[in-house]
Image (tube, rainbow, N blue to C red):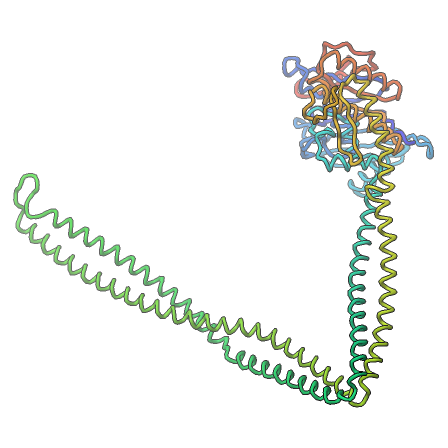
Length: 597
C-alpha cells in the first residue's frame, strides 16, 4: 500500500496571493477555508480561498484547474516571481518513508523536486513532471473527480460524456490491460483472417486446377487419336488470336499517330486570343451603345428647347436657334457614325463567334484523340499481354507434339496436387491459430474473464456507493452495470436520469461516487492520498440540515481515515462538527494573506 501524506503548501505571488506567502500545514480531520474581502465591503467572495486549491493542483500537475494560460496565474499586480512549494511524504511498505518537496515558479517558469533533501530535478520541465506523477502515482482525472472537487469546475464525474466515464472507471480498475490485449488479439485475428482468405483462395484455385487436370486426362484417354489434329487446330486458333491482337495494336497505333499535340496547343492559344479579342469587341460595343445613348439624349434635349420659351412664348434669338439646329445636325451625323461603328463591331463579333465555334471543334476533336490515345495505350498493353499469353499457350501446345499429352497432364496434376497439399497444410495451421485466437478474443472480450472480473469489481463499487448514499440519507439507488452505464432509481423504484434529480440529490450522488472511487483506488490500485478539497460543492441546493449531516459524516471519515479534509463554504448558519483548523484568508488592497482565525 502506498500512502501520500501532503504536509505543507506554500504560495507566493500566485493568483491573488502577493509577496507575503500563504502557508497551509495540512492537518488531519475537518478543516474550513474561509475568507474576507476587505476590498469589497467585507464580503466572502473573491478573497482567495480557491487560490489555495488551485495552487495545490498546479504544484502537482503544472497546469491550472481551469482553462487559463499560465501567465495569468501570476499575481497581476506583481507580474512575476510566482512560487508554489508543496511538501509531502511517500509512505510505502517496500521503501519506507521518503520526503519530497516540489517547487514550481512562474516568471520565470521552472519546476524542481527534492527527495530526502537531494535534488532529483530532470533535464526539462516535461521530464520532471513525468517523474512527479510517477512518484505520486497521480492521475489528473482522479484528482479532479475525487480529490479536488469544485462546484464551478464543470468537470464532475456525472457531467462527463459516456465514453469518458467508462474510460475513467476502467482506469481505476486497471482494466486498460484487457483493452490493450484485446486490441492486439483483434489485430492478430484480422491479419490471420486476411492470410486465411488469401491462402484458402489460392487452395480453391489449386483444387479447381486438380479437377480440371483430372477431367482433361479422362478426356485425353478417350480421344488420344484425335489429339494431334486438335493441337493443330488449337495452335492455329491461338495464332489467329495473336494476329487479331496485332491488328488491333496496329490500328490503335495508327489512330494515335493522328493526334498532334502542337495542333491542340496552337488552337488552345488561338482560342485564348479569340476570347481576348471577343472581350475587347464586347467592351467597344458597350462603349458605343453608351455613347449613342448620350447623343440621343442630347438631341432630345435640343428638341425640347424648340424655337420659343415654353413659359413666356417669346421666340429665341435667331442665332441661338441656328446654333441649336447646327448642333442637332452634327449630333445626328455623329450618331450615324457611332451607329455604323457599332454595327461594324457587331458584325466582327458574329464572325468571331463562328471562328470560336470552329476552333472549339478542333480543340474538342484533338482532346478526344488525346483521350483515345490514353485509352489505346491501356488497350495496347492489354493486347500485348494477351499475345504473350497466347504465345506461351502455343509453346505448350507445341510441346505436346513431342511429349504424350496425357503424360503432360499427369505431370501437371501431380505437381498441382503436391502444391495443393502444401497449401492445405498452411490453411489448416492458420485455422488452428484462428481457433486459439478466437478463444483468446472471447476470454478478453465483454463475455469472458474480463466480464467476470468486472462483475466482481462492480459489486464492490456499487456496494460502496450504496453505503455512502445511505450515509447521506439519500432516497435514490445508484448502480453501474457491466458496461459502466449508470442506473438511477428513485424511492419508488422508477428509473430516472441524473439531470432529473434535485440539486441536493445530485450533490449526494457526486459525493457518494467520489468516496467510492477513492475506496476503489485505495483497495485496487493500492494508493491513498491524505488531502481532499471540497470547494463550495455543498453551498447550493443542499438544505442546512442535510449539509450538517453530510459534513459530519465527512468529518467522521476524515478522523477514521487520518485524512485532511478542507471545505470551502460561504454558509455561516450551519452547525459544524468539531473543526481541526479554520484557514482564514483576508484580501486587502488586492492581495490575499492568511490571518489568525
